[in-house]
Image (cartoon, rainbow, N blue to C red; front, side):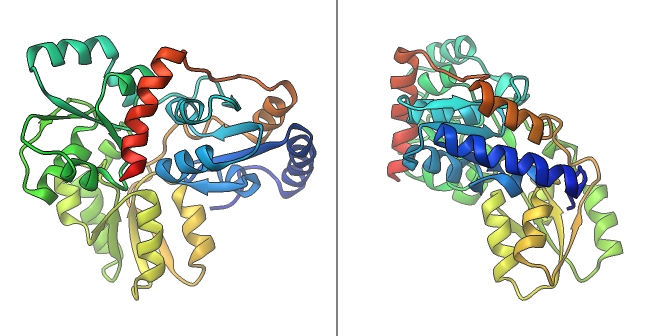
Amino acid sequence: MKHTISQELFEILAAEIEVLKNDRKAVILAHYYQRPEIQDIADFVGDSLQLSQQAADTDAEVIVFCGVHFMAESAAILSPDKVVILPEEKAGCPMADMVDADGLRAYKKRVPGVQVVCYVNSSAEVKAESDICCTSSNAVKVVESLEGDNILFIPDENLGRYAAKRLGRSLQFWPGYCKTHDRLTMEDIQTAKKEHPLAKVIVHPECREDICQEADYVGSTAGLIKYAQDSEAQEFIVGTESGILHRLHQVCPEKKFYLASERLVCPNMKMTTLEKVRDALKTLSPRVTVKEEIRVKAKATLERMLAL
């Protein structure tokens, strides 16, 4: 994927950002779903697990998180001594908004002893009410680490069902979903396969169950990239957010990638621009913070995941 701005403007803004970044002792983290030009100025590009780990490991004083709100919150949870900036304050996650702490507390009252596995795509308050976090990279491993059947998976029902099916386990599911991945239909996949009969179908586990069953490979964004690199196949139908194509073309320039549907665009991930990154470094805002009592509890659920 090409930059959505001119090369000349890219170079001007990238140079400004580089100077400010050094002045602020900052590190720029970007998710694979960000605009191509954002990925290109980042110090580290990754999926949510990789970025959580990077946030915890960095010795920078300022973390500029080019992603959505829950990701910046995770960085603030793991790195309370650092200034965490989210260049676009309104970049949220509709799936994360589908569960709140009050609703989860009510569920736990109704189902005593339930173990809550919380997808990282959730608020700090929800993490604080959960037992362990997971990402799409390690959801199967996290569920496998728990004993018994009294397990609630929140908030993504599709990812929860994928993990349960892989393990042959019975889980309880919260009725949440990713609005972007859930748009992908069986019809989209069948149309793409007709057009590209030699292509492997690779999809994210936030997609619907029937889509995952139809795929040649199901994995996190980092997993999809690694699969494309390691595979002998030369063509791939990609069932995840469009931003990943930029990275796929970079690491596999000789291979062909087709987005499974033009609707696979997350408006929240595309809100961050180079101008907003520059301004955020200038003003050290909008800043993301987490109340200490919530942070301590949420950190415990993230650390249980990272310890696996």
